[in-house]
Length: 199
Image (cartoon, rainbow, N blue to C red; front, side, top):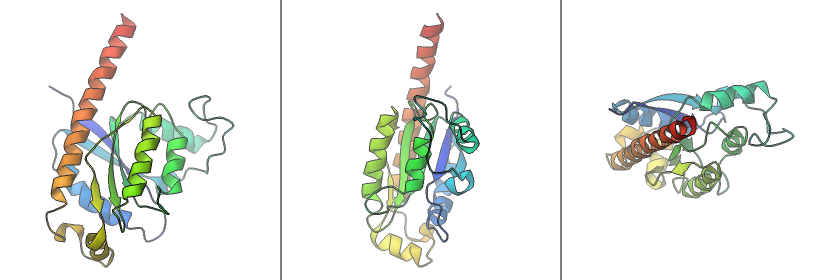
């Protein structure tokens, strides 16, 4: 029997009045309904990472910032990550890039999913984030949620995302199914590798 996956649900923006909280509240109901995974919210506002100023990247040398050390250790607890992201000037918010830059081992060989929002559903930001994830040996999954266009406008004006209709439910399920598949596959592969190395 496969173990329950532990998913880190990363809230990527930190600005006052962020839309991320609305997207998070809606998406939590989708992941709560699953029995093959549990999750923990990782809010970059609370992580309060300093702007990256280490002498070398974490892949080459341990970081010195205590907050960054705690962040890196926390990431190791998870089997995969889903990032709730906006799109800033055709890319990911600097807070997300900074969070990735401040760690290494905690990201490696794990699936990455996205819940994007904005005028175009954060499509360009998601593509950039997938490229960043590949650098860490992650598996960016095909399933994704994009809250864009009229949905984003209505939600930004106060309509709960759950009341927009059920057309976002399918993408949410596909995303979570992909996370379950690749999360289990990655755990199995890592376990087999560790067994070979120990033999």
